[in-house]
Amino acid sequence: MDKLLAQIAKFGIVGVISFIVDYVVYRIFNAIFVSVGFSEVFAQYYLLSALLGFTVSVVVNYILSFKFVFERKEDISRKKEFIVFLVLSIIGLGINEVCLYLGYDVIYLNWPWLRSIMSEGFAKDVFFKFGATGVVMVYNFISRKIFLEKKD
Image 1 (cartoon, one colour):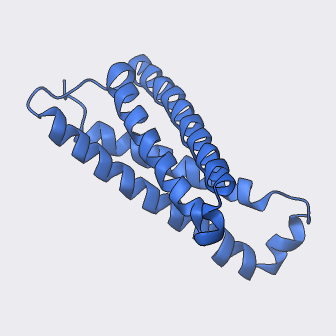
Image 2: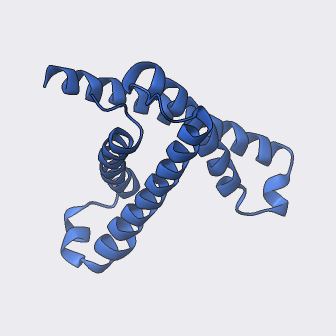
């Protein structure tokens, strides 16, 4: 049990580092796209920034996960391992988007009593983002443990 708790803690640290990388790359590309005028040509430039941030963070997460969190399977090539990792990450991204949509567009906007509890200044997007992140973290840990980690 102690080994599992240590693994979960390491997974959390790797997740925080990956989130920071994602966010910093996202902000850097947003600034670049605005400064060169790309934002005037492509109004959804932030989506491209998000894709670039996600891509870099997946690579960082992959490297750190197998260096510090999970034991590699010996019967799988690194190429196949990365592809599985990437597919699981993309599914996680989809789960994140669904959770955000359900949280804000379905629950918050359609439940007046919830809107009345949350004040105007309340950071609804942050609240739902943290919830979605929690769901995706559990999914990522379990799916990577099942599909990618060496079995004892």
